Length: 254
Image (cartoon, rainbow, N blue to C red):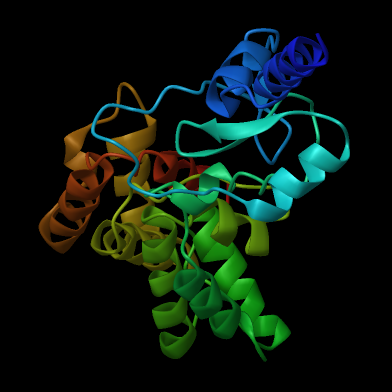
């Protein structure tokens, strides 16, 4: 009788041990069925399927797993990283780079440095030239050296740095004349200077009749004046140079 009881007790003990040592993978699988979502190290919900082609980079974070378990949650491999059954944020997600950093049309750092260098140490007279020519297409305030700088800045603005160049020089007052090329500007400025500052009354009448008077007569222009005005007319036909028309016609009232 005692032998039978002993055998029964041994059988019960064996059954109890077997129950406590169930398959751990099966236990984990059953436990995971209760988890509605898994979260990565940034606290964002993730899928646990391994992507097609496998993992190019495994970001399994042991510290994150330890933190997850210490908070009473489950942890397992999710896809190519560690997943936690609770939202336990271990790391702050890096901020996305600004769009400008990846914008191929953005003014790059080198161009901005060149702009800063071009403006450094300029006198008030030089700045007057740069401002007038860059912001309004008016080179009349420039000497030869400063005009070279102004032309370079206009070319920079024609590229990717229009906002930066105008912002540095124009104080919100801009007549966008960048489309008008420097050769055309020179031709028109020559006519203006000769007719107005040079006091050439005959050329004044020629300009007025050619550009400002709808019923003007071509007879007002002859010889060298006709050639000069024809050069100006060609320049005015260039895209972006029509702003000079108002400037030339202002001669009429001088």
